[in-house]
Length: 297
View 1 (cartoon, rainbow, N blue to C red):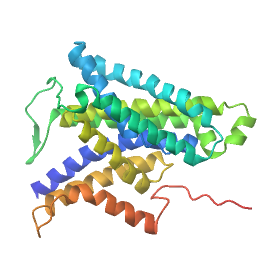
View 2: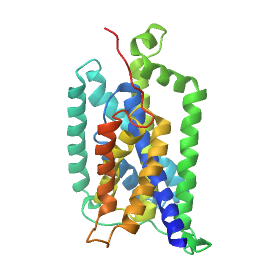
View 3: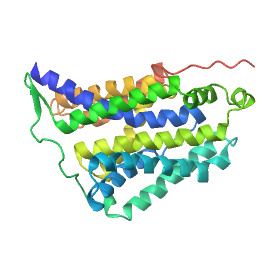
């Protein structure tokens, strides 16, 4: 039974990071209906910026972590302003192709740096002795990561429900023309959505880097698994991103824990998200919490 609860704890840790990673993807789609294919690269950039500030600039991690979030906030805003602002009103496939090109550019730039080919790890800043309760253990890094993740998710939820900018973003996601008619700047909302997505991606990257170490392939993989998560939860649902992230993390851990090594199976944890993706697309294409819009002609 302790093994089962250990898998539950591990799944919650992984799932919370998936939720935070998916949140940025949902923010962009919810406000602008754009699929940001380069989201994994932004996650990696945030992690590497955190490492550079912490190790190379000798800034304490409790300062470098929020600094990297601020830097990535403005970096993502700049990407929207330079590459995507001009495409407002253009066919959606054109915008998606730009994000694919952006993904390739960021891949190339990262591979030109030591981060693209080497492994790095953050210097320890928390106790190394894990927390153990009833045979279930969790490291301090995982515990702090989960607490930080849920604190950020709670902050984003408050922002969208209570703040003027958050309500404006929700209005734009529902009806852009109606929002413009009451004075809301749609381009400004798009820029803010990208900036906030960059902020959440940097937070996810920093947490992943502290738990698993810095490896570009690992960070990129987290960005790829975001797609099944957001499909499961619903492309336009923040609550769906959180719930689906937890569900996906639990399924991955249970698949790896109980199926790998049995019946000749290996790597089921990596394959399972995409099996779930196919099933969801077949039976519930809008996801668990996605909105099914009906257009009248």
